[in-house]
Image 1 (cartoon, rainbow, N blue to C red):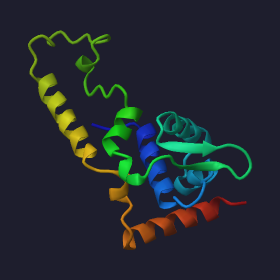
Image 2 (cartoon, one colour):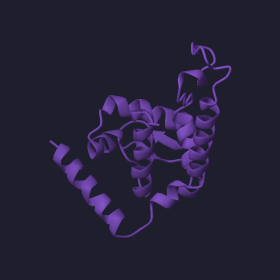
Image 3 (cartoon, rainbow, N blue to C red):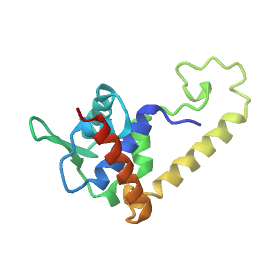
Amino acid sequence: MQLTQFTDYALRTLLYLGVHGDRLVPIAEVSAAYGISNHHLTKVASLLVRAGYVQAVRGRGGGMQLAQPPEALRLGAVVRTCEPHMNLVECFDRQHNTCPIVAVCELAGVLGAAQAEFLARLDGYSLADLLQPGPKQERLTQIWRRKVAAAEP
């Protein structure tokens, strides 16, 4: 299974906002920190706002911040929001399925159970679990600072 790039960017955005929870963060800053297209990240941010994970302030001095405490943001819920179909195989999409063995195949059941376990595991974690203070978070912040500084004119 592979999550889409969109979901990856959404999770990374939430992580960045969680670490920088004391201020509004411009989309351009997150874009620079990850080397992600500003245009693409704007689409990601739009979904995060519509889903209620992020709040945004427009205009000069605006930016984004988490709309909920990190403890309330369950990773499984974010993935479900960003991956509304999660069709691991063709037969998971009943409208477009053309598989001739779907009526007798056991694979869909096995894959469906694996997918449910995957999402259940993610449900067991919140954004706060990824924001534990310490050496890893300090290193992460250093990496972001270098990337943002390199992107500044």
